[in-house]
Image (cartoon, rainbow, N blue to C red):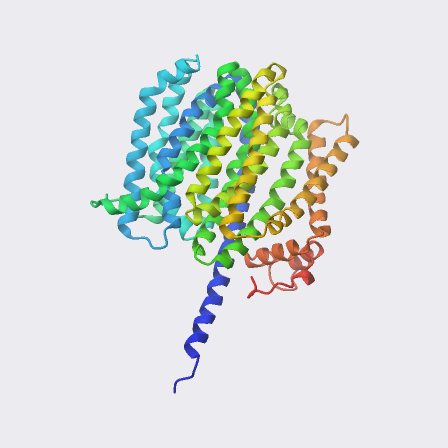
Length: 532
């Protein structure tokens, strides 16, 4: 006997289950990505602390010069292939084969061009020693192009646990094992080169071993047009991001010595490696995959974006505030005594790094919706603005390269505002709702900065490592208290929901939930699953 409305009820249930599954997948993926980020940051600090004491600033300056070309080539080697595989609603085997073939071929082309142009790059920077370093780093291009297919498929399937293991494993083997071992043996700058190439190779092989995705070249043009068309448009915005992200390094390479450039690059990477690379990747990889799934559902997309932006800012900006205040101790402990000038640069890069990550969250929204023209417009405006700010700062460069870092921070802040405008228009959000999402982050950032400054003042004259340990403990406690006392109660409810979906809080009435309730206050959870 037919029951009226039975099919409709089934459909509704399926929709609710689909929403719950996606929320759980996204929350679980974010928890694994954040966990891998914590491990990577720890591994990176150990690696940075070791090689910064084994190599001198000039060798890092050579690496920074070579990376100007390598990072540019990476945008072409990647060709947006991974993002294309994630964003496409339906994916065929021919398109996977086309992505694999295109990645390898483009990587080989980039290797050949870098090999031929290496002497000219050495002449450009008046440093011939950079040519062999560039050629060594360029060996990673084919492996990077090959790895994009596996990376895209793992993100598309939201297999962030496997991706986290691969990312951490390849970094540990490449950098902590190969890189540190060669540095100890006196390989100098070549230890940095070997670490990069080894890590890229291991990641590509590991992903393929896990997926065994088809690699036989596709013999028809349409699959290549599909995967490369979106990727090519996407890379326009990313190439502009590269230009803006390296315009300051190029300027300093032209006006200063390799040693000064080494100080600048170490300060930059001390902040941007854990923030701009690891933490940004953890947040944006999950956000892009989740928003791509609901790109045609404006209500869910709007809620997902606001939640991601609010919680992401709550994590990022207090961390950056703490790094800025603790800069002298951070540099002394991690880099060592020969890197004192870098401490003047870290606060500017901390501000820039926070805005950079927040910008990428909104950029992920634009890419998930294929709103690439708007993203390109923001990136172009950022590059032009940064160029103007650097030109304004150059006459004052005799006071130190911190003026260039200040120009970078100002440009990153304005780019973030630009991407917020893009999100506001794409999602048709009330402007007040966008700014309200930043209140918890601003409240926590001020609290963390004051706590770290208080500890630094109280422990003045104490060894740097003890001061840094106290600053970290005070900053963490201040963040917890600021979340608990935040005037926007909804952020506690949202954070509780995401942690519960990821399984972090454990079973109801368990010890972890009781501890979490002291901070997140579950009675504030007035938003039901259906409303989410």
